[in-house]
Structure formats: C-alpha cells, structure tokens
Amino acid sequence: MSTVDNVNGSDLTARIHSIETGGAVDGPGIRYIVFFQGCQFKCIYCHNRDTWDFKGGEEVTVKKLMDEIVTYAPFFRASGGGVTASGGEASMQAKFVAELFRQVHAAGFNTCLDTNGGIRNYNKDVENLINETDTFLLDLKCMDDDLHREITGRSNSDTLAFARYLAAHNKKMWIRLVVVPTYTDSEDNARRMGEFVKELGDAVERVELLPYHEMGKHKWAFFNDPYKLNDIHPPKAEDMKRLKDILKEYHKEVY
Image (cartoon, rainbow, N blue to C red; front, side, top):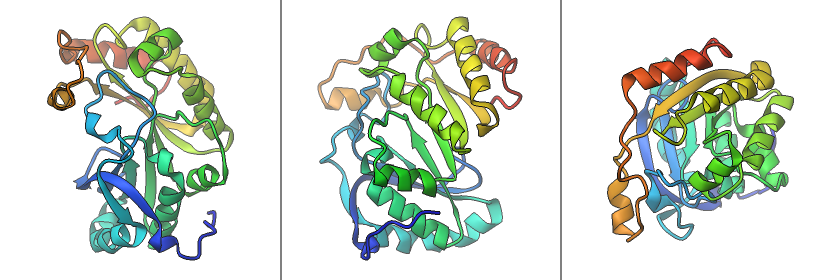
C-alpha cells in the first residue's frame, strides 16, 4: 500500500454527486458507493449526466465519508464488501480518492474504482490511487476508435493503455461493456474485446455485460441537451446472450 503524503489527509475535500449504501453489483460483497463529480468523457448514453460538472454536487471531506463508512463495518465483514468510487469519473479527484482508500484499507475493508480509464497523466496522486485500489471496474466503451469517439467524444487509446498498465502491474480488473443496440452490440466489437481481454491475461477476473437503459434520459432534458438515443431501446435478452456466448470463447467468467 502507498502512503499519501498529506498529514491532514482526513481534511482533504472533494465534490461528490451522491452515495449509495448497500450496493451489490459494483464490486464484491455489499458496497458503499461514492459517486464523484466530474467526467472527461461525454457518453451519449450517460445515465449520470448531472455528474459531468466538476463544480456540481456537494463538497465533503475524507473524514465525513469515513465517519459514515465505518458504521457499515458489520455488512462489509459479513459479505467481503467495501467501498467503491464511481461517478462521473472518480480518478479526476485522484488525491482525495487515494487518501479515502488508504483509510478504508486501514479500517480493514477492500476498495474498487469504477473508471473509464481515460487517464493521461500518471502522476503521484494517480499512482497512489492505483496502489490503493484492490479491483478496477474498467468500462471498455467500444473497441473501434472512431465509434468510441462518437460515443464518448474521446479516443479509446488512453483506456486501452490504462488496461495494459494495470495488467503489467498485476492489478485485478472486471472488464465492463455497456451493450447499446447499433453501437456496441456487434459481433465484431465483442470479438475484438474478447481478444483484448485475452491479451490482458489473468489480471481480468471477470467480464460483465451491462444492458443499456433509458433511466437517465430525463436528466438530459433538464440540461436542455439533445439525447441522441431516443430511437434506441434496451437490448433484447437473446442479444445479450449472443454477446455473452461470444465473450465466453475468450474468458470463462462472463456475466
């Protein structure tokens, strides 16, 4: 584990959007999930559109979060759970999250980072965050770079490089794909992702397929932003199974 060199680490502040207690899908066991403000991706299907603004949300300290986190200790111990940083993109506030995770580890619980992997500057704060993260929930939006730019506004090169960096440093990953009909549900995308997962080797513990949903559409209307997927609906069960079967050719743990 790293040591964040801030003698008043508990006083560090960050801006968060919300907190979910009792989460059961964003990492092992029962999770305390902190959704951070700010994101460098602008995904056209984002269901947390209100997390994009770095100035939004509520300002909190590490101490404020830890005071609440420790109250869930019995649930963490019973389930093998812990704390997940999500967003938005939690790595954009790396110094804070690294210190939070350091204190979570000191309390005896595990940590997960739900991330798009769009990291370009591997500075000390990012290195500390990587060292303090037990499992990375890495969202691979799309393997085709042009389509990735259409979906997120950015190249996928940073994300792929980040995944390779994690694998080289023996960090555990859960690879995630949001299945969006006509965008990310092709056999080509699944097979290219399967080959990439295979390249990452034992660092990948599991692959998760997450069906696109429309629950965040109303948030786009609130911001007077056009929602480009009005004619796109959640994938059918048979399409989810088709992609799952393809990816199982490359990795045994696909969900």
